Length: 170
Ligand code: SF4
Image (spheres, helix red, strand yellow):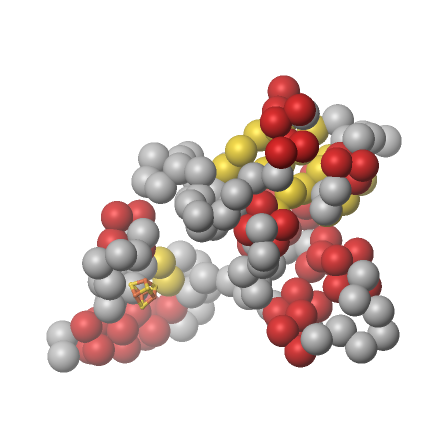
């Protein structure tokens, strides 16, 4: 069985306090194709992986040195690597239900009493109901990357977008 590695570069450079949604979707999709997946926290974790997806949300996050040595097996993605022009996830991956257990080895490494901030990795579901943000802070990638109020999916989203538009007019 092929093993696919997932590297959360934000996590390895201090953490973002949130799991990487794209990596969890890739993990889910690869599992549906029969592959084994593992979150790579060290170079040793990546050794048995045939392919490795490296993602980061923030441009400031540094990529570990050991990634350079295995770059030929890596695919890089996420806003942190490409602010605006990065291609979206393929539709079949985007539609995949996130594989939340991807982060289990990381959470388990804290032992029996993990800190409260780890709840986002182990007890929380995340997703988009819409894209963009009405606040349009000048430093934020959302201004360039996402059109405000873009519909994503799901029931109730149009009403949610209407609510956001009402706020935006204030
Ligand atoms: S525009 Fe401002 S409020 Fe909206 S996501 Fe960006 S930083 Fe946050």
